[in-house]
Length: 394
Ligand code: PLP
Image (cartoon, rainbow, N blue to C red; front, side):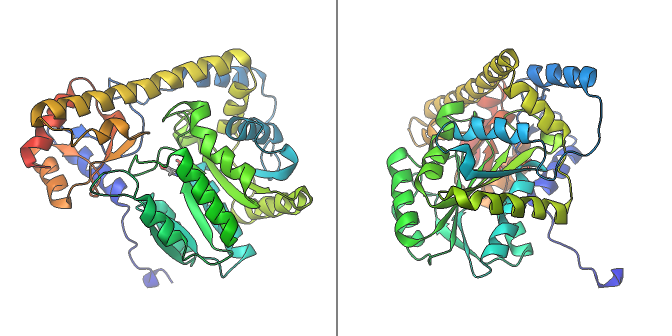
């Protein structure tokens, strides 16, 4: 049987991580994988996470199974964090999932189950794993224009033009905030126009929100997701706690299915739980319990929000410093977009050849599509990167 296996395409980001590890240069700079790092290059355990883990260690009396949907208290806490009071709880079905990836995977399975003819419209570019999982599940994807390589902002007219080709029942996958890989995001007027189009053409919205708190703040970053959830007939939201709680390896995510008709919620909930059962039965609990502990305790929550805000501000500072340094070196504003992008990433919009030269000549690792992880920088490496960018002629 195994002789029938064929080698699967390597994940480009994971391959880049390996190349970085194998590079003997001591001054190499890793701007590849999407993990937050502080100025010392460490991905720290957040203070509130440590405190919550200690409490759980002291008080947890069993590790028996939770429910198929995970702990309802986790769903309540996360729904509150993401949706605020934009949608009544009775309209929201939700299950815990292994990370945001698990939430996306379960959402795609839900789409295939509910409407096998549905196509999923994905931004060009999008997080590569969206495409990979959709392909694996045999779901047709249709790219919509998103990144404008001239302005490094959103090509909104192109996006709308492409979304107009969607048929009723097709799904539009949107990034709730901090678009990965580009860092370019819709403004509130544009979000409203996308919602109008979804409603006019009978499309289904799906939001992937993996960076709440990394862009403009916890509340601000949830605004678009809340607007969509409150305005459409039905939508799915795949959320990740990996980045904003720093619990990457705990695999902590949530999938919501929201219907404007609350009478549908029971069936939605039952179906989501069924899908969990088919794929892995009970979802992981530890990370979810940590998140619940933090979100339901005023002091822990405040401390977590404060630490997250520092992370956000440090990334904004790095963005501004890099844009300023490039302005200084080039005497032009053509890199100002770096300070305008939001989240952990910016796509600098250059060719794979120049990305390759940054790596070979300067030991700077970024993804081939020229996505760089802003959090991989610090005050020492910002000027080094700026000089290298100018050097290779980006
Ligand atoms: N969605 C997007 C857009 C992401 O960038 C990521 C992680 O990189 C995820 C989902 C999934 O995150 P995880 O499965 O690690 O929680």
